[in-house]
Structures are given as structure tokens and as C-alpha cells.
Image (cartoon, rainbow, N blue to C red; front, side):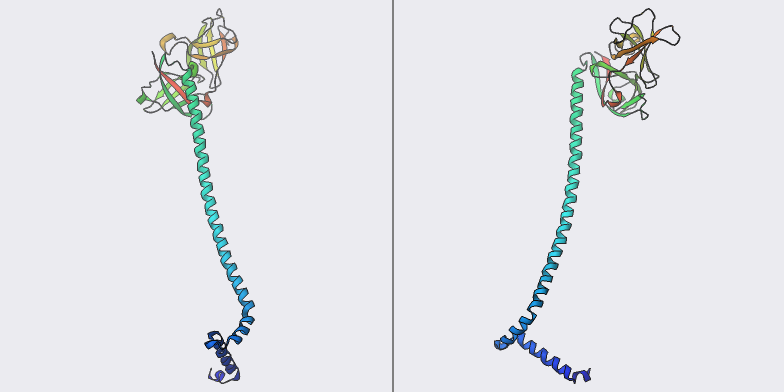
Length: 269
């Protein structure tokens, strides 16, 4: 290091450093002309360095704005999803209220003491055998009570009862049997479920008259359920397999799989 300090190159660097220092310190503005020359030499480099620094600052701001926009977009997307879900729920509630209001308008409330219930589940095999409602013994429900919808349409009867829920055996259940008759001429028989596929009007005497289009209602025989609840209309008439009776296929007036609200008849008024 001492040998380098004695060389001419070191002396040149030392003098140049002192000179530049005096120029930029500029005592008594003596070195203004020299400072102008040096400034002119370094000006292009200053512009480049300044532009680069501005670009870096702008780039960091741009990247920051991208991150902020991404965060805001995520918040907006989440908010939009919440609004879509809320709107769907409100539409469902509105449709449910309209449906319930229409049913209440068509129910025989002056004839029966009714309990409204919501369907919470159905036969998972879509066999039309049963459905579950959110009313039970806490609401005065007991086994055997009839379950209807608007226009006094019978869909089944209470089969099992828990404290807060009940299982309804549907008319199409193979274990379901209901005493029925035609409303046109009081032809009597029994409505039986066909393994979830439909309802058969059975045990019709050969001497009785039954025709396609006849309405089938509960007869009230045996006191198992009120008289006059609608089952459906006769779609087809044929002889029973043993040819001792007549049979008729009953067309149900609605699809049970789409039911949301039903009504349990606690008693007749």
C-alpha cells in the first residue's frame, strides 16, 4: 500500500479527487466554470439514473396497485356470491310463501283442525313410499292422522311419530289401504298402493258402475279418516286377476316428489 501511495498514478487520483471536491464544494463560487463543465459531462448519466429511479418507483407502485386490485376483486367476488346466495334464498322463501298462501286459500280450514308441516326428507330410492315432516308428538300428531294438501287432496297418513318429526306413509306405498268410493255414484272399494308406482282402486263389485274419469274420494267407512278427501280420478278399468271384482287405475292429481308443505288433519270440526 505504501509503494502504491508513492506512485504517479496515486498522485494523479489524489489530485483529481481534491479537484472534484473543491468543484462541488465550490468555495466562493470560484470553481463555478469547472463545475459547469463537470456537470455537463455527468448530466446524461444523471438523467439515466433519475429515469431508472422513477421507473423503479413507478413499477413498485404499479405492482402495489395490482395487489390492491386483486384484493378488492376478491372482496367484490365474495360479496357478489353472498348476494347471489341471499337472493336465491329470498326467491325460494317468496315462492314458498306464495305456494303456502295458495294452499291455505284452497284448504278446508272450516271443516278440519289442520297443522301445517314442512317436508324435510323423502324416500331416498324415489319409490314414493314415504316422506318425513317436521311435526311430531310435541305438536299433537299421532299415528293414523290423514295428511293432505290444497283442495283436500289426500297424500297419505301418519305412520311413525317422534317428538319433533313424523313419517308419512304415502298412498302409493304397498302397505297403504284406504276405503274409497266414486263421487259420481258412490261405487265403493279399496285404494291400494302399487309399490310406489301408483294407486289401484280394488275390490269393486262386478255389479257396480265405474268409468274412466270418475273421481275417487275417501268413503269414511271405519272412521279411519274423514269422508270426501280426494284421491284422484279413474284412468283405466279392468277385471281383477281372479275375475271376481273390477279394478281401476287411479291417476294422482299431483307429484308428491315436489311437495314442500303439507297439512295434518288432527280432527274434524
